[in-house]
Amino acid sequence: MLNRLPKAQQYVYGILFVILVSAICYLVSDFIEYKIVALILLFAVSVMAMFFDIFPVILIAILSALIWDFFFIPPKFTFYITQPADILMFLMYFIIAMVNGVLNYKTRQWEKIARKREEQRTTLALYNTLLNSLSHELKTPISTIIGATDNLKTDKTKLLESDKDALITEISKAALRLNGHVENLLNMSRLESGVIKPFRDWCDINELAYNVKNQLKEYASKHTIKIDIKENLPLFKIDAGLISQSIYNLVYNALIYTPYNSVIVMDAFYKDKNLVISVQDNGNGFPKNEKEKVFEKFYRLKNSKTGGTGLGLSIVEGFIKAHHGTISLENIKNGGAKFTIAIPSEKSDVNNLKNE
Image 1 (tube, rainbow, N blue to C red):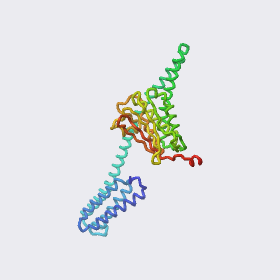
Image 2: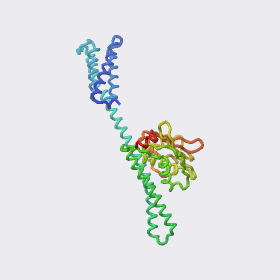
Image 3: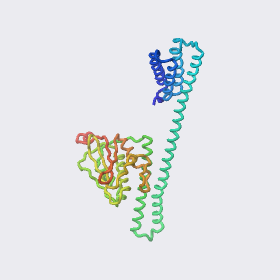
Image 4: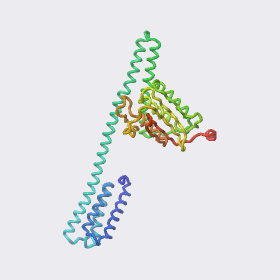
């Protein structure tokens, strides 16, 4: 926006613009009346007032009035005005130019305030959505942990070993779920503050994928997670922590929102100087009219099951952008969805590994 330019540049551009318009009018002054020139200059001032700050606009209005008087009002090349009607017209021009410039500037300020208020209302609505979601999402695992712990404390003499194991498993699942929500909130905070800078180091994508699979085994009892990555895939220079969390979020999202017995497949390969990672499933896919919104913060698909904060996919996108990469979503023709990540990355060879 021009109003973001330094004041000095606004003054220079404003003066040059008025001089340019005046010069064009002067060249055709034999064909148009000086009264028409006044309207043209007023329009020029109005245009500048739409973009510049108040003081440059006032200067432009004063300058345009003086130019109109000196070069166009008879007698020309003098500030002396002989006709009373022209004196009145000059005064009216000066007043109208000043008022028009100030009003245009004030209108922009009011619009800016209105936009800021609307943004604040939108932000407040988003955070209310987040808090409402979190009140449920955090309460559920906490209640599970408290209930299971109480049972272990009060009935430990009566409980069978299998019952104790089941309660401990419940506590473990609830703790992992709680930890996931806290991690998402912390990650979103880091992304918004701009403090995330990838620390790239050589990473084995196969190992990373199997680690993600192991972390999610508690959630995958009714699903199948497959890893379809070639064993001889080279190492890549990436931030293993950020990419691991990204893949974790994608696979976790698939486990939560696909029907039981669905298959989630992780794949990775090197193409066009990019590490390409995909996570796909054979579930129901995404509604066409909502595909573009899935990476928005706090956005949850309509008619989706309760739960979730709508942060997982937006965090993935943030981590991938931090690597200067891209992430895309497509529905698979025979059913399911596929997320594809492309990250510019070095790949290892013998010389690279020797130099590290």
